Image (tube, rainbow, N blue to C red; front, side, top):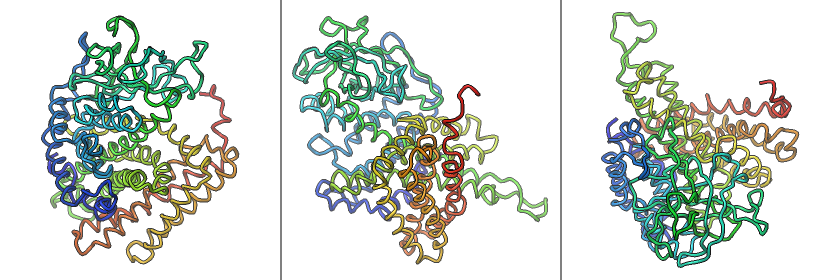
Length: 606
């Protein structure tokens, strides 16, 4: 794939300018320096750095995986070179304030920039993704000394960051973590603790590309009886540097954090994924004592609530990564299907020349499905980042409600259906698709991780049902319906899209009826048993709405956009209504036909 086709500029310009109106964020005082010229220059820079430094080692990093020896983890040297180029361009600091050394750009714009790097090489892009989210948490909840010592070097791209939540025995069930934090005094960085325990699945847990690493670690402070407090209420958050920094009393000493092993995943192979041991006291003893030195972020017992800031940002970024892998899979499929000649139209003499497979109806079906999932996911995640900008910088309460409702959708729908788009890419490429000579094989493997990253689909669904619908009593859902209804009303005036709006309205009614039943009788509808089905159906409703909204925006700009571009948006919106939205009643049917079947089935029968 050529660098010029990482992301079609027309696609990103349309989403940012014609659809979201991201340039109008300049009306918010925080973003007053934003202009169309600034945005264009940033996207040009992102395309250049991504194509020159990230894309070339995409396949190499898949083969030459990270290695571990006594000195630590070693990653492909080209990854370090790429991340240095990313830092030199100032891209770690895009969305941070001038006060913290950043560019003070909207999250929407920073996401559009980062999309280039996710498209080019998602494994290398994982390092800045985690680092930026880590630094954002510290600048929000950390004391001034911690911000200066750890967040600023991350914003500069000199230090990298991680999030350490899961443990070997506790994945999504964070109430079961056993990492312990014991008070150890106070110094120039804040309240100091000694941590001991194990953390699993830590992306970027160690590497040799940055000066230092800041681990954000969830751990429990023992109660007066010396025992860990059960549940999530006892969880606190700590900043644990790999090498201790000033003004702490142990500055310059190697912290008691050791890589116990590397996890070898099917995708993202360039991202070092580690099992970390904290506080074993065998190889490193800062201050002559065992225990990893960490500094409390926030107050004791607030760890999980604070960590949700980084988790939610990571969820949106995982959704964006899945969307961009799907997008690249689609663009590769379009190029291949346009060049690969095979078969002839029905009724044509066999001695005529074969035609490009893109002209066969079934291949068109696959390409439309891909486009609807890939570009739909990109739109969904950018919409969520736009809501985040309005919620934070403009203090828009409605935007905050909608963002909370849509975050699990952005993560889950994008990762599930983005994977389908990558799967279709293999099918379109035929026998070549599952060979390592073509990138779509690796893109599929990389994308397969995203339905698990940052909370599995099932976990996201339970959160969506329990917290976003039932506990909220459907308030945010009702707010979203009003926006969907407004789009449907606009669609009624379009000859090309009126039918699309009618089908969307039917899907909206089916979803609204089910949500009312869920809220009124969660137990009787088997809400938690069928949470994934509900989230899947809801995600498709949201995607269908956004496709109609995009198509209407494209039609409104028909006089200045290429005809093929507008027709592509309209055709995909029509495809989604005709082929995808009718699936919603089927996904919802078990909640009425057999709502408690899954609870009633005896696990022993398997």
